Image (cartoon, rainbow over all chains, first blue to last red; front, side):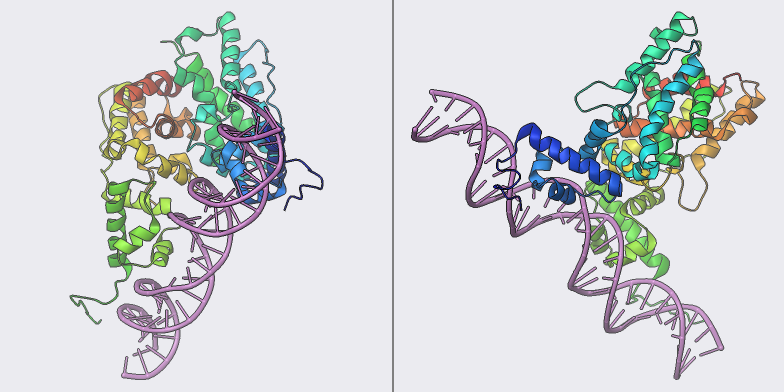
Length: 199
Length: 199
DNA sequence: AAGAATAGTATACCCTAGTATCTTAAAATG
DNA sequence: CATTTTAAGATACTAGGGTATACTATTCTT
């Protein structure tokens, strides 16, 4: 189908081709959501062959996640510092809602459950190569609270640091909607008690 | 009423057929695990047609879950009462490990993530018709603690009551193994602080 | 520049979840 | 019984994830 002598006289390779695929993937995701997103259609729109996709992404959910991380709403890396642990956590998690608002969480549910087949919950918000932004942000928020004497970070095990991501993902998978009210409840009923627990 | 209990009924129906299918499913699950468990093979072993399976179970994960709930290790419904919230929780959750030990959690991982596509985490341990044993057990354990004055149950929101299931499932999906040590850490670092938090 | 190595293109293929269809046994109804 | 309704049997089919293969354009190496 791709006429080599037309728009693309040359055969695309490497980053060029990769970007073309990701753009097509992003476009299709927005149009039909994850469930109806097919690898064949992405390939077709990118004028690429299916093996090109699979050479870069091991599976459909991985391609979709990469496209969202590249073109979707950026996670704001600025760490809130309101002088209050509760409020910092709420502000930060409200940023995450943006991604799910954009599509409607039901359009992403399948993506999340597919992703869980290959990666742990705590890494769902990580780009494949980079570090987990969400977790490091939580750590910084906690360090701020520590300076104010609200808790002692050194005492928090890894499992506890992962808790915010786990709870967030759980809401997406369960309720298919994460509102500001839900965030506040999670913070009040679970996160603050756990973070500030005395040993 | 015609009583036609022939020795070799030509065509099985209802419960007979259903049990035959579930037995074949259970057998196959033990042999190959969930990933390589196929509907066609179950049908073949049960001498049944695929539509028979789909008339009863909407999807593969549902059939597998039903077979495990029917033939797998029974969840012990006795509620521990050690006089201590922490210990009650630990004892109870150690019972759950049996199911995953039996197969090796990696053989069940796909099942859990598939199930999450259709039901919330809190219901993963429920039989399709019955109530959620796990959650009611947790509630009873908490009521015992309340009698001892360790906490006030009325103040615990639903999300908090679901937390044990959520954390357990998360470990299965993430680490693919839930040991007694992990259970103890979850109880100590998360559950007890949350359950006993003062508002 | 020639040849090797790499990574596209095009296409066919496999596998399995899930569905549709048509025939027919068996049960329910009366 | 005769008739109607239900559900099993057999089988073909669709759709989509993922792989294999044969070939060729581009780039790398010498």
